[in-house]
Length: 386
Image 1 (cartoon, rainbow, N blue to C red):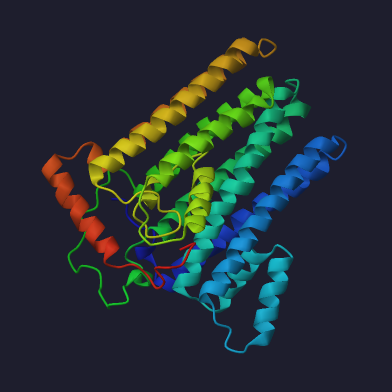
Image 2: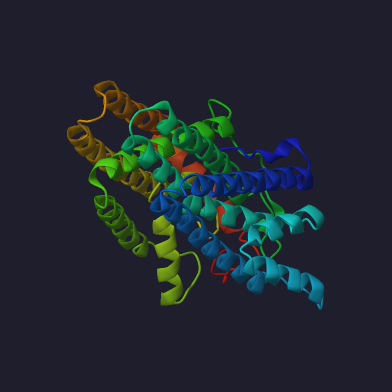
């Protein structure tokens, strides 16, 4: 089990620092996308693509944020605060409003909602933007002027997304947070947990995230640079397969058919790039599985086997058709994808106890973790997004 980043500081200070890091990351990513759109304004189609990604993702995240507000926040007659909330959401600045609210009025629930929204935004806004930059990088002549901007922007955005995933996952999956105390007044076990870690967990998790995301977006980008619109077929088939698989899994809470379809559709969209097993049994909207340990390991293995096969398929086609690229560039690209994916799998295996513990020890470990998480569900079991 991976440890939390927060015990070093007091809860309020550490969570505010994490929220500040998440807000800085989204500000940086948005600023980069605006600058890129301005840079490519002479190539109007690429400026339009970058801006459409930015605007569409912002609309979706702000709609989700306002749903959170309606389901959980009581303004208690504070009409000015309510007006500010709605105005900023209409201006697509809901993330900024949530950060300012946390800065002045700290609340555990708000931190969790902020982390979930930021996690979703990084997958809907930033990763597609990284894919576009890689496409432009490999689809342009290999000159310093042509490749410098896409390479720098893609690198910065990928690093920002990795930081976001690590911090947001830490907040969402932190079962020590009092937010998880159940309505019945149950508390966490007083027995200390056995942490299973070989290297510092946040370093390991960040390294693994960078590896998987780099391999995935690079495979998508180089494939698109040669085969163009066929990328939509690959992504569409992947999304459809994941969507059907998710529909077969049981939900922790009862939902209407429409809510379940919407939730699973968005989850499948997030799983196009990567899956964070740390969020399993997190009791949140991002929770994918609630099954026994051996079934979880099997599902994780199947997911990454599919992703690895897709990456290999796209890279093979690109390697065959990309004759105009330097052979050294082609070999380096394939080697970097294969190496990062292998290191990511190794890191995942080392921090997934079900992969290497004895069956009886694994069962005992799973029972203790699942009991603690399921006995400490937070405030609103009927909330659609939480």
